[in-house]
Image (cartoon, rainbow, N blue to C red; front, side, top):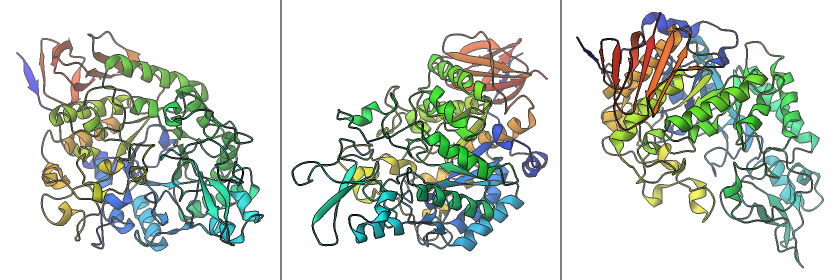
Length: 563
């Protein structure tokens, strides 16, 4: 007799939810961390922009989803030239998001619900409206504050050329010339991103002193850790040497650059780790470190430095069994010697959502402008999620991926706000597509995001992907996530660890065992037959079992337990 199984979708039990609140030592080694992009999560005051009070109101949803921690993208005081990654005051909340009392209330409520709060920290650069930078420009050449940034005289007869040939990640030169107080063209300053984001000079002791103070400010507020933006960028090579080439973005990720992944960054993080270890509560650092190899990423998570580093090599891997196995093996092998957990991530606020990436042909990278085959993309995204959550280590979930949201690829040009979009070269500038506010209800203003519309337009039909539309619906993507996170908590062989036991499998299929747990992921275009490894826990699509075998459809992942 054969038995057909639909993808499971039961809400977590009360017992599963209750375990969220239980404190665990080294919780971060197998944590599922949910990224909130505050401006697009929930709007409490109807101004069309998400805010901290909106996030606070939705914390019970995140608890019930089954995540361990919430990572908040920047909410600091900022002119918003790069969506808050241009910070004017690291100890203040931007009024569009609320105030420090709102941040305090959010942290307290999260802790009462058993959730931890990780905040973004932006140490590579500040806003050009930061007090240090404004004074540095106003005081003119020779100002001591200019030494806290990278001010240099220009090249050429009259200093009309940039100090070196570095290019901005957002396109164009990485240097902008200031107008001096007397009205004449003057020195140039370095900005690896937008001109409104001048890079700090981490060779200056005042910069390190300031950020150690900032760390203590937020740790005293009760945050559980920091995600470090551009963690690989703080230290620049001595003398700021020319690269000698154009199209420098094509080199990123392939070699150590004079402005990225310099060895000097590690001393900064050793000092930070000493501060963090003074505080109780098992608090953590997470590095956003784009490095050429996972081996170099591992240097950031040595025992006396940071706790985790994002695995961008995994995020950029196509839905292909052979490629996935290679990056999984290499990641685990690289992290094992330093004793750090691997991390796994499929989407974030800077890349095309994986439901859209996987809807398109392979090899297009992480910024894609076409919708592709929506049904195929969702099927693969669901399968990829179960694969990710089955791997040893920690996993990151980007808001809305639990709803199966696609990227919004057809935003009108006039509504786009990604600063890279307005600079002719550099990053593709289409990050707004993954930042469209998420839908909470089937109908109503902005589908429940807020009472006053949304800062980016939401697509028609967004309501059918909403939390309301998917809650309690067996097989919905939301219920698949809830069931997966509940099972991950209840299965002792899931979560922390540093190895998998690969099993024989047909071409295009990944199969591995972790104790009594078995995961099979079919990345191919045809159904395959595999052993039915035990009691079915969960599947991302419909499977059929008969006589000890299972028929696994294309683009489907299955979890079994032999216990």
